Length: 157
Image (cartoon, rainbow, N blue to C red; front, side):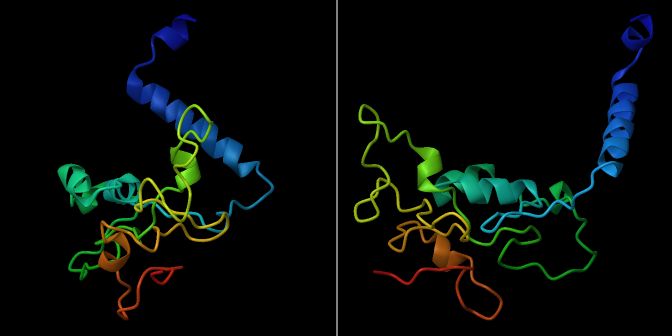
């Protein structure tokens, strides 16, 4: 106990890094993302994915690529999607953001009349784009370099 109590934050972090490195070396499977998974590389990728309003997102975006897991090469041309990150028009799934119990929000995720069109109604296994009637313009703002819209984009109704 005395040895553990004597450790500072840096020593504990080094111990945990070594522990997880050795544990990972023992894994006998390769980690692969599930279909429909969203890649997050930078802090702004999180804000863009979870924000349902572009006005709200602008309050929190850092636009600082120093927060990225993978360093951005010096002199790289940045542009949509992602602006240095991995964001590509994804949104949280409606079912994950609402309590659909009868006493809460039972009608929140009705595709025909959604509470929010900035959420995804894509089925599991598909890339989570917004509702076709997205009022915030998330799907039109994040174009691919060839000018087409987001991965898995659903045409308007």
